[in-house]
Image 1 (cartoon, rainbow, N blue to C red):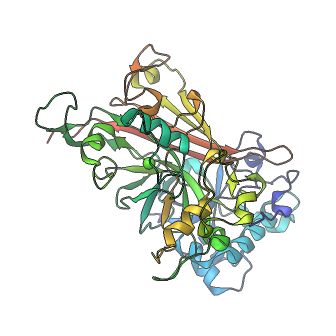
Image 2: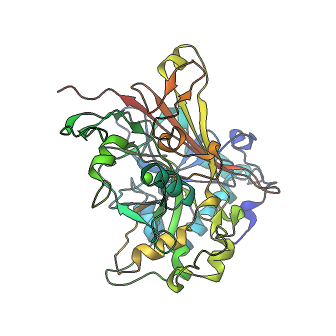
Length: 444
Ligand code: CA
């Protein structure tokens, strides 16, 4: 679908919420991402909100005072609950109307009378705990970066890195929804079966020695499809609510031993972290770009994965970055160091192709389902989205500013993902961040 630009994208509009006008803010008035938060004040309960600068606008409070000015009962009740699922299920029309309304209320030329009633529903982000934005019924992880697939394939099959299905099928696997956690939740090093590939010894059970991150983008399903129905590629974007950052923590030694013949299992499902703010498809409109240009000689997508408009606008200019902060660096007051920086426009498959493929067999997608892209890597060595690729499975460790070396993650390491969209003539918007610190394996 051709992205629609309107007054909510005007880069010259500022907000009367001053912190939203800082050039470095991830959440200017042009962004307006949705999330679920709980005020730290005692006995406060969870509610839906919108990020604006360093604050959050409490949509439940706004709704209860009639400030969302919409007579639509579904929209009102969707803003009165503690998850984004009902708002996601309402579809793009209601979401766009709500975005326009919030933009009108928060812009700096809004009438002063309205401002004072709205400002009562602002709360500092520093005073809240962020929660998972939705009740995620199902989680699917794709493998949509051909650079990641080729780099990983080379480590295991030097002569034949890319399997013959890759350029035809958006490869994915069903992940585990129960272990999705919001940014900031510590991640315990998992135990599992591993086997030294060089010896013929029996496998052992114990803490992973190859704990890794994966820099990914997730997208939430808005309106779903009924079981047995499909979602045509031309309509797929209308079924996507918005995006977040995803860290698909992975235990490479467990993965290497268990992955054949059915794919990832316990190497992946011990934890997956996501950023708390969901940036809507509307906010991303100025940053859409052409789908990845396939190399000469690559097959075109099969007809059910091909749409002219998706080819023209289905990509997304989204800069991504992964950093690490070791305990030694933290003690020395050293800032996190960037390990990889990539761009989502380099994905072989678009979000619409992944979603249309997922539903192409009649599998029903539901509001709040999370689909993740797979590790986002690029052509350069600096654009590798996991340590497996960056260190060539530990053969070429990275050196941190503290002088420490890392093949894989150590206990106490914090991994921080960030993402932002920038384009000449538009206001920069950000995804916030997705953090997680490694706890030692459980000894019991
Ligand atoms: Ca992954």
